[in-house]
View 1 (cartoon, rainbow, N blue to C red):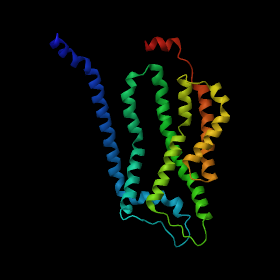
View 2: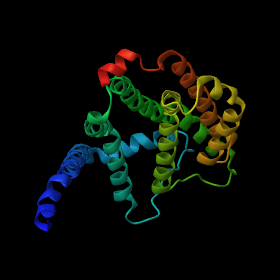
View 3: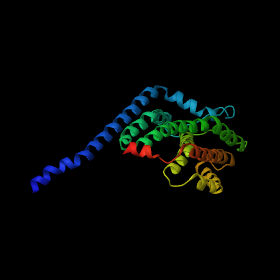
View 4: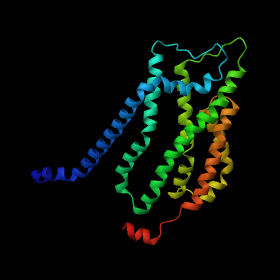
Length: 256
């Protein structure tokens, strides 16, 4: 009996092992593509940092510039920026690997809606980063560089600036996923369009609270994050009314 059980256990564990092997292979592919993108961008690391800092350096008073307070900052700040940009640039491939791993476990009607959501989530994340860079940064930095005392020279540390910018990039990139999150809540049956719409007042207050927590302590940046959050929530409700429907009996029979 013991020998029989020992011979059967590998067969029972084989499906789990095969899934783990597939997951490992997909993670390796994702890491390889990030590394390839990083190696191709690292030569332009300083140029990339100069482009990233342009919204601030364009507003600095004459005779001032950004500074490095740490000996290693001139190297590690562009290095960190290039690594993060490599992950951002490789995100479609990373999500494709994730999709390839989970797709076999989805029903047909789930696959039909998951693919557009996956593509939309990538586009919305990039849109959030672009909105932060082209709209939010000029307003925020224009405000910060104009309110300081006249006898104080604005010379920002490059590492502090990078951490600040990446924080806002992540904040706006995630915030722009609100339509997808709202649509998934409705699609999964956790709530309905009518129920979410009735809580609109609480959502608006919550948007400003999140904007206060994720942005610097000024009204401009808080509003620039809170207002898009509310508008994106409304977009999610509209998509919920148009797209989400219960699977038909034909879909259920097809899945079976």
